[in-house]
Image (cartoon, rainbow, N blue to C red; front, side, top):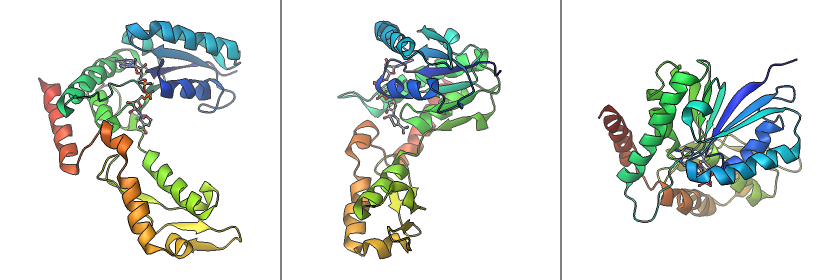
Length: 258
Ligand code: NAX
């Protein structure tokens, strides 16, 4: 029988964690035979909400869940974990400057990177979800030097999924019949969804290029590309140009050095 693995989810009382925890707990992530002990980290004022999450996990009576550790202490949350889902981050609030957002997140990912370094298994795999995910992953890895850099990744798949779903909806086909959509740039207004090499399988079984299937260059250029680029939700949170992104990384690294 497999030994349980310890998995930490940060921001565990928040929206994303609410659906993520269930998927991990029922075996979708580590397989149907892998028991888990869930470590749930959030900030102190959220401990009441987190208690509710723990009750709901218990109500599900999921056989793979061998323990739940709700906590506001990073050293407890990261103790012996083999996987870390870093969801908790500081969102951009009204009137907040980019620098403020950055320094708030640096503080969070510095503390958590350090806790990973000291308490997690050295083989831990870390997925950063909280935005700005790329920069947060960089900071986290920097403060966890004893864990290989390749064990850190940032979840950046959203824009590709969104572009693929957009094409599928336009053609009235299932999303898995759309292949090879590329997103250039970052999760911001710098992104460029590219379907030049993308293909679709039509309901009659024919494989066509997206251009031949949609047969509307104006639509692809103006509605598809511009529509996906102007992602208000992402822009409100990030609103970064390529140059700003570079500056953000440099600033982040220099703040780290201070
Ligand atoms: P919520 O505001 O619902 O939840 C965030 C949770 O994190 C809160 O419970 C908060 O108390 C907690 N938190 C804040 N600071 C913390 C700290 N220092 N330690 C532990 N927990 C802390 O946001 P939600 O909608 O769940 O989104 C979470 C993050 O995921 C956001 O940064 C969001 O931008 C990001 N997303 C990233 C995506 C991606 O593709 N990379 C997509 C989904 C999501 O938007």
